[in-house]
Length: 70
Image (cartoon, rainbow, N blue to C red; front, side):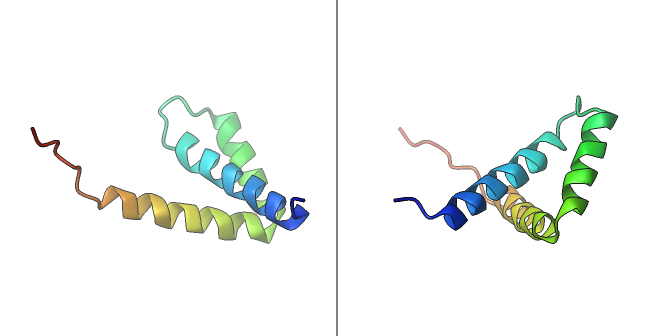
């Protein structure tokens, strides 16, 4: 049986990941940016989860790419 709280957490994490990636795209429209602002302000947990996602995004940017060896 799936815990509803865990499912809600997963949904929130996926929403934050979506916004983190979408806002980086050049074709992200003004309407989408406003939808993000609305989503962010609609619940304090959204801002918290988005901040965690940005932190993870920043950390991955610091990783060195792996070079395949023959």
